[in-house]
Amino acid sequence: MNSLKVTLLMLVLMALFMGVGYLVGGQGGMMIAFVLASVMNFVSYWFSDKMVLKMFRAKEVSEADHPLLFRVVNRVATQAMIPVPKVYIVPSRAPNAFATGRNVEHAAVAASQGLLEILDEEELEGVIGHEIAHICNKDMLIGTVAATFAGAVGILSSFARWGAIFGGYGSDDRRGGGIGLLVAAIVAPLVAIIIQTAISRQREYKADAEGGRITGKHLPLASALEKLHRSPVRLNLDSRPGAANLLIISPLSGRGFTNLFSTHPPVDKRIARLKELSAQSL
Image 1 (tube, rainbow, N blue to C red):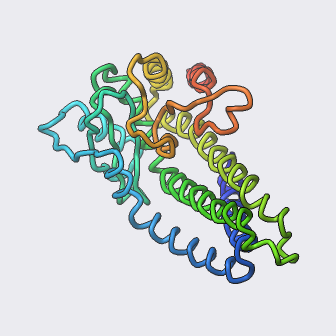
Image 2 (cartoon, rainbow, N blue to C red):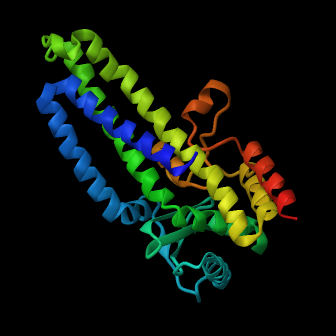
Image 3 (spheres, helix red, strand yellow):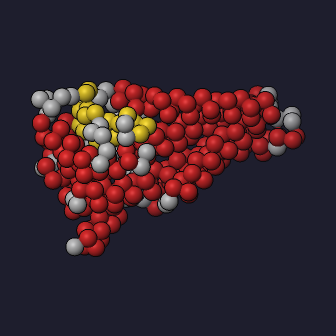
């Protein structure tokens, strides 16, 4: 999915948010939703990195604390020709990693203690390449904004459900009455989640490919994904499912119909694509 398609999906998500605001509160509700959307965009842009790092209890570390991780991050950042991001370690045995930051000048890469224990240096370089690719593409900012909108649509939908129960919003026929509230309460949050996860899945494919191009470690990244996928330790670094889209591999991946709500593509498909890209680069 190219940048234009992602932009269009983000616009649809914002329009959905304002549409639910209209169904719940008419023109006044739509204006309030617009103001909230603007505030959420501002907060997400300037403070998303701090919020994400605090959410995962990540601790900034120095080169003396973990020379291998620093060496790999510096090498990959140099290959990508970007400033070296700040380095964090998450005190968890769950093997996973993530990146955050609004741009390459304000970026951070975090790896869990569990991930550092099970990957060799080449596999770690593949993972860091994936995360550096996210930073270069501003994917984490996009993902944070998308998750914020999806959550806000869910909150407005809760208001719509209470309005339907108590009959507080249904009298305005121009807003669709009961049908409008039904859309706001049930359909809108499902659509918001599907859009959010569609954005996330396509960005993961792109980061795999771009990270492999930066480092030349397509196969080590595939090996790392296989290890993380088969890890006996639960992958989620945080108890909240909404944080799953930030990680390199999601503990919530699904198949079939449930894949509509998965923030990541199936691991076997990611591995297959990486092997194809490795063969093409020979």
